[in-house]
Image (tube, rainbow, N blue to C red; front, side, top):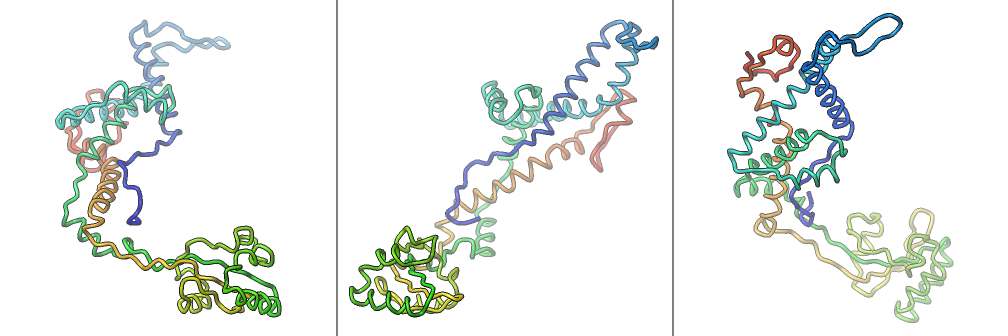
Amino acid sequence: MKWHANFATPTYPVKRGRWTMARRLFALFGLVLLVGCQGRDRPVARADGVVVTERELRQALWERYGAATLRELLLWKLAKAKAQERGITVSDAEVQNALKTRFPPSTPRHLVETELLLEKLAWAMAEVSEGEARRYFEAHREEFERPERIRLRDITLESKENAEAIYQALRLRNGTNFADLARHFSVNPATRQHGGDMGIIAVQDLHPKLQAVVRKLKVGEFSPPVPLDGEWVIVKLEERIPAERKTFEEVQGQVIASLRRRKAAELKLTLPERWLRQGKVQVLDASLRKSLTFPKGAERR
């Protein structure tokens, strides 16, 4: 985290594959319920003299997908109940917007609503005290500091002779012709078209040889040619920006927002398992009871 970063209310990425599978499971489970309401022995398919009945189809779908769908529905109901306790709701407009921007359009509504409720609950439950924020600040001071930065121009040349000639030309005009000479003679393709402008750079990011040279320059001054990796470099200091160290009071809100965002992300992942572990889940169907996976320590009946 950098002290100048954007600390907006978090959004959470959604894995498309997960929701594609969920849609299929929900559609198949809906077929299970539909089939269960009709005559169970009615044939639903024939092939080469063999028949598949509704009873067989229902049983196979129930055994294969029933537990996963039941788990989704349990979490949906639990999320709604927990949200209601805190006065948290998800509107139809929010669901529709999520379906347009974050989920495949055919994602079942209960899955979208569960996800949105989890996000809101996690954000509401993620509390960060001033003391906690201060401890983080003290332990990570380097995240809230900016080193000394400078704005440089360079003229890079292939030979010492050329570098000395350009240096003398600069001295004749006190460096006012630096940008023009860079455009015409520099062999640095990254800065040549910009008159040698290297932009704003942290001094510590420069080559050690240039660091030593730049620290001696005043704004507006240029260096003699410096041998560097087989070339010769002349630099001009255009601007010097002092190192900055933010106080806790200056970044308190940003630290709290960052820690809260981190806590909310963790809660969003752990809340479903916590609910199932503490919710005294009763699975009344014996076949589902055998196949439904519970988190360790959950009370299941």
